[in-house]
Structure formats: structure tokens, C-alpha cells
Image (cartoon, rainbow, N blue to C red; front, side, top):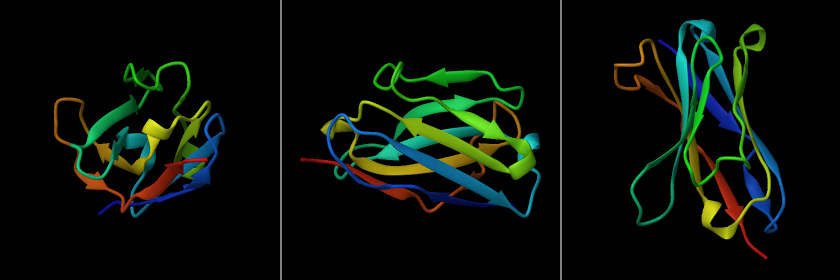
Length: 118
């Protein structure tokens, strides 16, 4: 059973930066394809981006060029550095893991809150 724990959220000014982390325990992160999602109050959950086991990344249009995803399998951690943050990036951010790309995400973290406001 894989446990995922996100950290790094907080309050930041528009134009600022944050780096989210997703630490895994109870399993070997290198086996999993990872995704970052976010959900704002009253809105549906949205895919932010993904990183495959081999390191291939995908980003939604709303964050492309501002966010990047990386993974450090030795540390069992996935990262989401976020730059040029906008108020519309305000949401709770979640990481998730799945073994194959054609499966649903099996494991989810509890999320970390990101608030972009002046």
C-alpha cells in the first residue's frame, strides 16, 4: 500500500513561486506513473500534469511553461515547481500514482493548499 504525502503549499503573491513535493512510502515510486491534480472550491478536479516512469512529462495548457514536474526515485519523491503563479492557480493540489497509463490513479495524497493572492 503506497502512501503519498504532499507538502510545500502556502500563500504566495501573484507572480511568485512555490515548489510542491510528493513523498511516497510503503512502495517504490519508480514503479509508478505519477500525476498532479488540483481542485478549487466549487470546481471539478483538474489534471495539472503527469510524469511517466521513464520521466516523460505532460502539462495542461493552463500551466504549460510555468510549472514543471520532476521525480527523484532515489528519494521516492515527485516535485512540482510552480512559477509565475496566478490567482487562478489557487486550489488544493494532489499527487496520485498508478502502475499503468491505462489504469485509474490508485493512490492519492491528502493534498496541500496553494493560495495565490495579494
